[in-house]
Structures are given as C-alpha cells and as structure tokens.
Length: 351
Image (cartoon, rainbow, N blue to C red; front, side):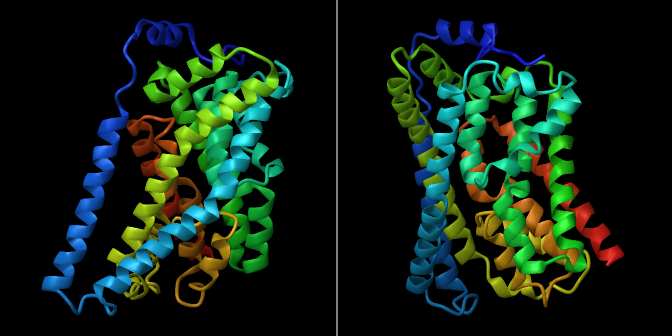
C-alpha cells in the first residue's frame, strides 16, 4: 500500500532531533571550486606540455567550454521550471488520495504503471527531478519514484516524436530505446524496493526540505510560492554545476578520439555511452544529435547513447544528487551502463 505521509516517522524524528542547521553548503561550494581549479589546471598543463593534443588554442577551448555550458543551462532551465510547477501541482493542488487510489496495490504493478506516467508529461529529465521530488513529498516510495524518474525522460511524448522524426523505425532504434528505457526503469525500481531502509537512499538535505514543506502553513497560494522557492534553491545550484562540468569535459576530450572507434561493435557502444554522459543533452533533442553519428557508429551504439544520456549524464547526476545519496547514484550508473551496453550489443547482433 502507498504511504500517505510525506516522510516516515523515523525520518521526522531524526529531523526534529537535529537542532543545528545544515552545514553541507560550505563543503559543497569548496568541492565545486576545487573541481573548477582542477579543470583549469589540466587545461593549462595540456596547453603547455602537449600543444598539439587539441587543434584549437586554450582561449578558444575555454570560450567553447563556456558556450557549451551556457547552452546546456539555457536548454534545461525552462524544463526545470516546468518540472517545479508540476511538482507544486502534485504536492499542493491535487487532493490527497487522488493519484494513489488509481495506482495498483501490488508493488511491481504500481512501478509498471508509474514507469508509463512519463508518456503524459512532456518534460525532459531536468524537469522530472523536481516532479519526482514532489512525488516523494507526497508519500510515494523511493523505489516507485526512481522507476518513474528513470523511465519518464525516455517515454515522454516529445522524446518519442523527436526520436521518430530522426530515425523513423529504421534499425529498430526507436523501439529499442522505448523498451530499453522501460525495462531498465523497472529493474532499478525492483532493486531499490529491496532496500531495508528507504530513508537512507535520500540525502539529509532533501529530508530537511520535506520537513520545511510539510510544516509550511497558509493557503495554497502561499504554500505554492514557498515550495517554488525551496525547490529552485535546491535544484538550480546542481543544474549550474552540472552544466559547467559538461562544458569543461567536452573541451578536455577530443571528439576525434571518440569518432576513431565508431565502427567497432563493442567499442562504439562504449564510446557513445561516454559521449552521452559528457554532452549532457536534453532528451527532447538528443535524437537529432545522435543522428549526426548514424553514418559512422553502429545502430546499437546509437541506442546505448539514447538510453544512457537521459538517465546518468553529468547534468542529471548533479540534479539527482540533490535528492538521492551518492551510493544510489553509483548503483544506478552501474546498472544503466551495463544494461545499455548489453542492449546495444544485442541490437548490433540483430541488425
């Protein structure tokens, strides 16, 4: 049966017992600054000791990296805001029990339905994170929410239309992407449904956010505004950091190194998965980007790119870290990468 309380009793007690404010902000800022310093140092070292490694000089690469980071941020921001608004609708405006009573009681059946919910929500992975946070605050289980979160950016209507526009039904890329996204989402949901203490899958900061939202008093308009501010403050720093990382990594890894192995059945899958993590494209448009590699890379590698990117790219990992523990992110990444590699290999064998 679905839990109706936003957080468990144990979680509420633990949060209430903590009288000191969270001090995670300063360490996270230092980590971000340290990572930025490392990236800049690496760029200067490459420019000094291996000037022929990149075709463009350092100032040009730095400008390209900043441009790429800004493009990822600008592309993602509208969907993040839309996701926050949808989260507020679910959390504040939808009456209690309105969603839950339509859900099957059996856990596997409930996850199967939730993994199809994204078909009715035209939001990419960036907006699905705040929407999933709203489901958690409403009382949905962690495994149920993860199932939705993994499947939604792949099975949503805009992604289906854009993937069909790019590839049609050639080489089974569209069908393999949809089936693969659905299966890996339910696999992840099943794995984490077996965890004995779901609260440990969430970050302390998110649990504190749940408490703030639950304790907010006033009419729906006041509560909506409060949640909008809380969600943006939680998600936006991660989105900015993820966008900067995506831009930095793209100027550190020569694209030619990836293209050189595009025709190998196994290495092409690995290369396209790495590319998906690095470029951090919105799932609504990544099919058109992948189309530019279709003549060089194998169909299985294209499928792997389209499955991995919406789930575990750099931007998405940064956003997920606002809610889920590092151990969850590592586990998800391992499962998704292994599944996508197997799926891409099977597609290469069948096509």
